[in-house]
Structure formats: C-alpha cells, structure tokens
Image 1 (spheres, rainbow, N blue to C red):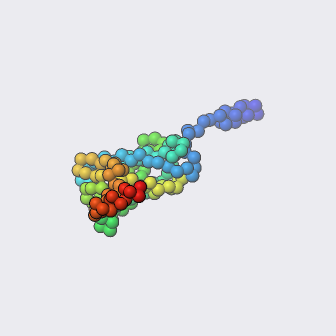
Image 2 (cartoon, protein in one colour):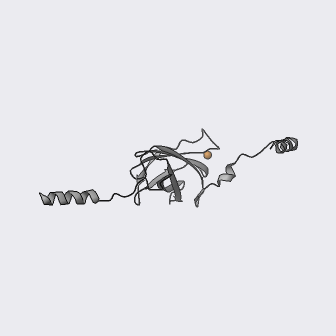
Image 3 (cartoon, rainbow, N blue to C red):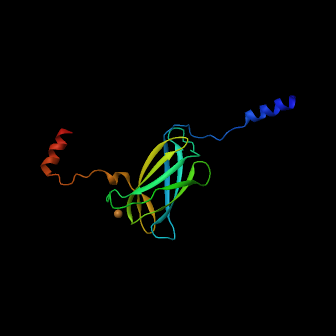
Length: 154
Ligand SMILES: [Cu+2]
C-alpha cells in the first residue's frame, strides 16, 4: 500500500519536455537542399511556437508549392512533412516543375493550426530564402512628376 503511494508520487514528478502551447501561432525555419534528382528538394522544417519559442511536436504539415510569377501554370501536388530529427523537426521532399522563385505554403494542423508562407529561390545548386526587401513593390511606370508629388505629400 505504502509502496503504491510512493510510485504514484514519482510518476507525478516526471517532467514532460517543454512544448509550444496548444493554439499558439507558429514559425518555421525552412531549409531546402538539392537532391540527386533535378527539381527535387529535401526540405527540413523546424516548427516553433511564435511566443514560447518551443518546438511544436506532433503537427501535421501539408507543404504546397506555387510560382507567384506564374499563378496558373503549375500544379504541384502537396506533400505531408514527416517528423524528423527530434521534437519540432519535420522533413518534406518536394518536386518542382522549374527553377526560380516559388512560394511554399505550410498548412499546419495538430496541436495548433496555422499557415506559414515562405518564398524561396530554387536553382540547380541550392535553395535560398528570398530577400524580403527584394519583393517590395517597385514604382514602375511612375512619372517623375508623380514621384515628386508623392514625396511632397509624405
Ligand atoms: Cu514556372
């Protein structure tokens, strides 16, 4: 009888690994690498809670890819990322249809629901995160006069 009580107490002291809070928004580090097959990339995804910074384990991640410059031209089948390399780590193999700038969309369900959108530039030799400023709207086609007017109002 006494023994049972002691073991029960011991179990209560077991420390669970720190995990992101359910319902917390998440961030992802996405690191894609080339494979021996052209246009096939191995993407490692590290999922963390946005506020807690803690790994998000047990998530289901559907990864889809599209080309912002060619909205209707491609139809890449979404893949499910598999847990890999410890809590919060996932791996997905994606097959693209051409080199260039692609947007990866991570639809996350499981302990938390979220969507992460990341723009990456895929080439024959690597896959790099696109510089965020690079994508900023350019003032194309704007006349000098209009530009001056705009500066005045600012
Ligand atoms: Cu394309």
